[in-house]
Length: 190
Image (cartoon, rainbow, N blue to C red):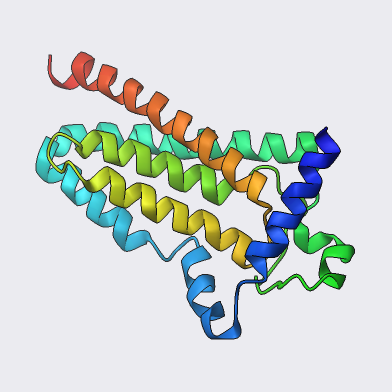
């Protein structure tokens, strides 16, 4: 059963990955770069500052740093625990026409750190700002999905890596949002 699921995952990866074209490669390389969205993060922090004030912002920065550290470290633990090679490390996929355009290829891929971190940030930011910007969460979830897909496009993750990373990121974002709400009530509102 697991082998069949992994075969479907490989086939779906090849389908999605080979949809790409050289015309779009540079765009997806920019999307997958971890530094591309620093302006988005700065805007979100500014919105939090304008909405909640400086004390709350400082507390939330600590919570966000803990959240990203948590998701990143758990992702690495899973990668080294499962030791599933990334598609760019599998020669048969390269022989089957896989497009590898990323600048580098890490060792293991299950599950995606880009997907988990971007989804955690999207859920956390969307929930924190939801009372003031009702549709922002949908924009952030769409952004996170685009970042996640970019990992398939550039050839470094399977779809299952992406889905599991996004699910873990969503749960992490929700958990840290609840922690943040508790800390705000306990230390800022009091």
